[in-house]
Image 1 (tube, one colour):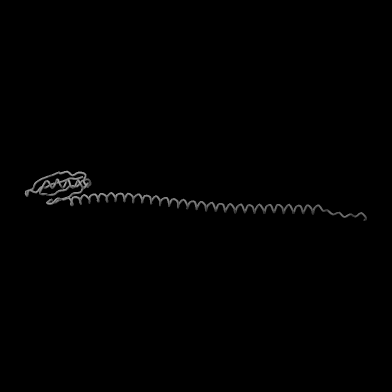
Image 2 (cartoon, rainbow, N blue to C red):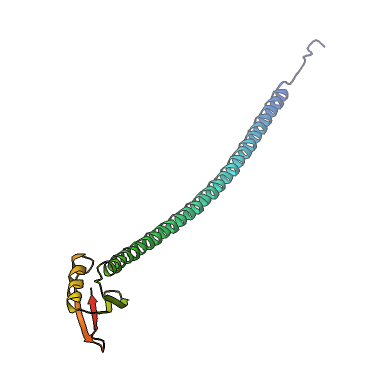
Length: 174
């Protein structure tokens, strides 16, 4: 037995170790791929969630902007209505002041022995009816009224005598 050699086969052990390392490598690759997939899925979900939040915020902003625009438009309309109202009120006030001046002038310049029986105010003219004892007083009254510049023109429309020799007159003024 002199030639007894030990025969050890080391190749299967190396093959087995190489196979285990390859399996471990592929397992790590699969785990890493799964981990990358899960991270990508999580990032995608966060992106979708943030996109929805941005859309909601944008929608809310647009709604607020629309509400503010409507409020501004309504305010502008109200301002225009108030300005129109103020303009109308000023015109009425000016017209009333003008008519007050005319009525004041009628009373202030009324000659002695002359009475006014009616005063009719219309949009553009005043009709005055009265009685006097002297025709010169009517002419004087007209001259005095024209001096006040409250009246543009005064026309003697009607002149008549009654049974007491009083003179009835009617004046139209613009």
